[in-house]
Image 1 (cartoon, rainbow, N blue to C red):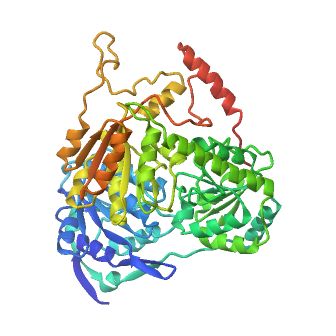
Image 2: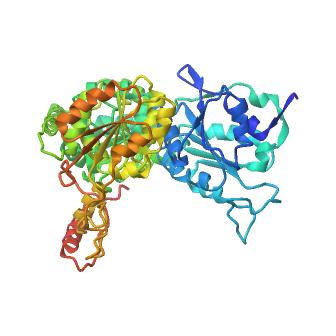
Image 3: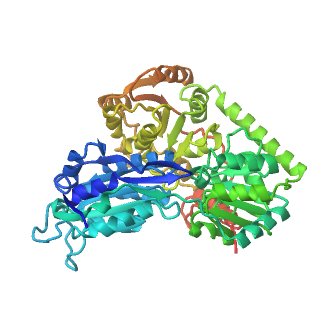
Length: 619
């Protein structure tokens, strides 16, 4: 057997750069390169390997969590068929990635994490930044990655790499099992050499298959749809990742079956498709909520049925409701005691469409769906054209960006009050135009995610919509966007605090406590003084961004035009009304104190108990 003498770091990079994926005859490299911050735990191992492998691009990040978000956003845009490696030193650099890993795994997005680790020899211990334990020497902070990784391994001997690397790829390229994969490599092992088999470094193509379910189960699903009177499709991210959007459009246009979209699934249909009822669940439209309430058959496509999608298990109230779940993941396909169609969404939909060639919903039901679609679009138009005094209204800011952007452009968001408003209001015109990280709803994802989206779609305009709270969590990747000449447009809406949680706090009777960015009041010893004088303009400018400060929606519209002509990252700043929001149409299960000295809390608790009566077990 031919061998090649390489360090573990060199062998790792040599292997990764030769991994490809293929779906539907299209082949591409799986890794677009590596993000990293180098330190004593990886600079002489993985870092040295990256230095000599100039055909495997290396990108310097400013924050370890952020670079995982960037990699995940890139992979999301690429339908999980391509991603990045992320490498860090030992210690805080490694643990900074844990939040990003959790977000990737929860959203079923592939990212490969290679944190440096302690010495395998244990001679140098405790090494700088090492966590010691009096119970075992076989532990480091990297063990914290285990619960948020889909695969986790530690390479204590060079030859272990030979069997570990293919396992990494098996998980990363699996539509059902993908998520964050963590490969911990002790810093001494990274630099050790070994005679690796040459075969390990040959080009390898991982086929992304379109699996199909058992034919008997598929026949039962066909029969269930044929027997239904008020079917409903809940379209999740799996519809888009599978490339099933055109198939879905054809199927629902012909049958009249209505569709509601999750956060990850928004864009499954264009907003003006007659069967599109828009946002599902807690942040849903009135039509989506009513149709879900009455549905006798719910067909879930690529959804994991989060509490937002199911209105905390109260969305589907028909006593005879049944479920069919189309999902590549067996775990998700069985949810709600559904008939599980485990497999690829596009392939399964194609078969269902062919075998239901004569099925159509009743005309009255179809007309009702179309009416809901039109009435909601009229509501959105009214929000978009509101004329508010300073400060602006968040809904009209969304409208300005949406109306100005092109179908190929992308809006990116993750946390705060913006995601719910975007879910309801954004008029999608392409499967990739709406990019929300809402599985983890991670504050700080937005700018890093916008960078990843831009790298995946270099010809599209990327609009990162972010509140002041998320901006202050993590804005550093503005610097990376400048360095890499990846222009994104950041729309910063300032409401002086955590507006979303402030509204939730008000709804549970707690008066927005702890959600305002205010000085501590010397007379009350509470955070109810004047607002803090944070200068977001100077902050963004200091990182290299061009900044346009606007006072009202008229100036904001002009800023959008100006921003498009600027060749580097631009931030548009606008103050928005904290108290005015887009209406919500249902409840969400957030437990409220059973006893309280405050009357508002007691009243909220009574409403909460009443709402909980609508929750169901789907058995």
